[in-house]
Length: 360
Image 1 (cartoon, rainbow, N blue to C red):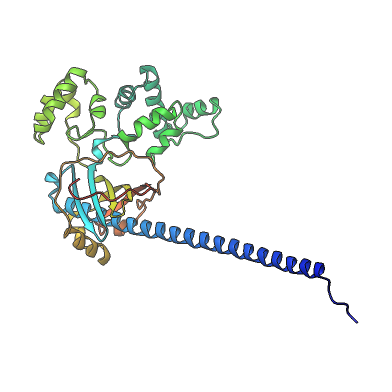
Image 2: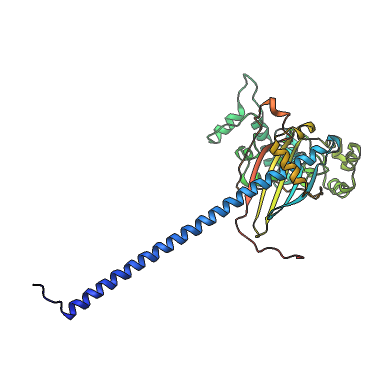
């Protein structure tokens, strides 16, 4: 027959039960905290995904609007730069476009032009000339049967790769060129391109650093030209006269169908994103022959457009990007596309800012 528990044993048993219950409550609280953190992170991730999807759609709309406006103009009167704004849902979009002829083409520019550019950007003359030689070696195929001196230079320097010996596929390849330091490449990226396909630059829209790199340009002539440039007509003779000593070979005002479009999106919650893309225009007739989705987006976007301005995209931004190229499209469809995306680079700012108040 079981003996009744003493008062001390009963107290001990009740204490054990209380402790067990407390541990269970602690465990349940921990699970609740973990679940709430999981829900919070999931909601945040979904919010970021939604912003990303919306941003990509708005950037696509800005590219189509830019291409549409550029294709509407006659090729001889097509603006080399401009801007427009539109608003869609909870976001305001500013898009600026600039002809790639404002930059120095790594595949077409002369060695003198390249050396001058690096020197203008702060490199010593000897180092600038050496890098210009290596750029030329990187983009030039060696003659059949001749010794490959360029490849030998890379091997002698202990590099695990050889020069491409073909045109640059992307401006970031500049970082692989022998003698091009990271600092030199970083300074040069905003002023170079591989998309203009021209040895000349459009001096009417080119940055002062690019104009200063023109062969024969002097500091005095540069200052005089920059003062005159805002009032200069798009006329080769007038531009040549304004350039002075450098005008003989630099006043070609090249045309290009490649444009750099910088899209800045400001959401009502204060979040901002920016994307830079380079597009290649198709023929003027093709703007109405694209996919139905493209036509619909362009028609919808034009309703919010506020005309073209004179601002110029800075370009050269180096955020995390998704390079995208459609340059390998089949020839049979080349003339049917209003534009093609040659590159795409995102620079998302993850922080949020308080919404700007009206009138401030």
